[in-house]
Amino acid sequence: MKALSRHKRPKESVPIARPAQIVNDRGAAPPVQLGAIPPPHPGTPEVLWSGPPGTQQFAWTVDDGYCQSCIAEYVAFAQSSGIHLTLNPNGVFGSLWAPSVVAQVRDMAADRQVQFGNHTWDHQDLTKLSSTEAARDLTRNEQWIEDTFGITSRPYFRPPYGFYNSRVLSVAGELGYTSVLMWNGTFGDATLETPAQILGLAEQWLKPGTIMLGHLNHTPILSLFDQIQGIIAARNLDPVTLDEMFGTSRETG
Image 1 (spheres, rainbow, N blue to C red):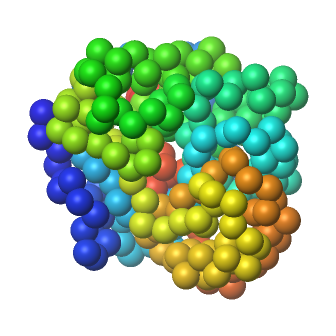
Image 2 (cartoon, one colour):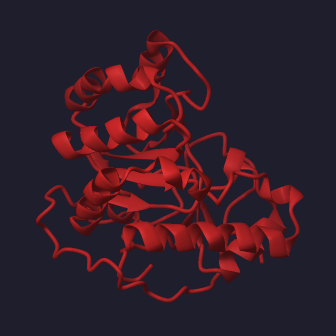
């Protein structure tokens, strides 16, 4: 199965999906019915490097989750600020999601403020697994997301480390992951960075069309949420979920 974009990051940010309607108000659409999981829709994957042009949208995406306080404080930040996030957690760290935090996320997912992408169960490089193993890893993580949060991650799949090949794309597409999520901006916090480094990257990358990569792994970013919000406000940016950016929905998956 051939993807609809090149396997290397383009030199310029060339959006692949069509512009979508901006949804700024959490009450703009009826709540998502949690637990009503749509079936997968297999298809040819497209690789998403950036958002559509002509809007002030950016998508704040957050991966992994091996830091329990990071999970809790990110969720508390989303709840208090109303900022829209896309979470791409690994189910292997599921025990770190406290029941109260899960309940908060479920409420925000129902309100379309938070959604999920599939980042695999345990963050293995799928290019080194067999097709059967890769499919099992994606399916196991999807089941954990559905069971825990009552919502599907389809059609969004972020390959661990950003590594994929034609075989991985074929497996993903057959499972209904037809939007392969890459990024064109990062907080750099997959590893332990200083607050100054994180803010420097926020200044560099927070702009219209950015798919911003963050992680639930290290604590320095937790003290910077107010400053990051200040950058967002000063630039008149609209933080949106992937559904809002690309015109997809949890009801369709």
